[in-house]
Length: 176
Image (tube, rainbow, N blue to C red; front, side):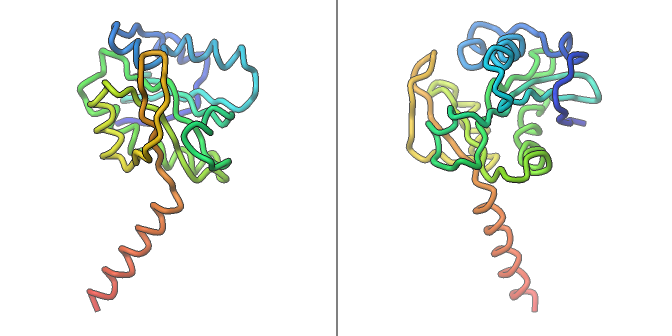
């Protein structure tokens, strides 16, 4: 079972895994991300540990700072950064589970947030497809990242909830 919890220092050994050369071009290690959070010291970025059967299996950060404004004009959004899954746990559906659980995690812990944005490298087609399947949209914005062109993607909770509500209303009227 996959779960998300705010990072704790006791998680460090479990999230301090190496990334291969390709993965390192697309994301930061947990150690690098934690160092960035410490150096910035804004109080606007939160580290999250991904657990699989109660063992640390991945890591990401949620950044409420201004970097998100490359992808959206929404001040109530958050930038998903530094997402990775420990190579020992890859291929087990953990990345997909994270993307399906992150919405509820954000809504539960950050009530004012109504959108998640992220950047995915142009060459990282498997991640791009995963994000699309999880409901993220490519709004046509791009930026140049450390490893080339990145698509800026977003998922708006308000629109998503309206679609769910409308689907329920349509389904309910058809069942009568």
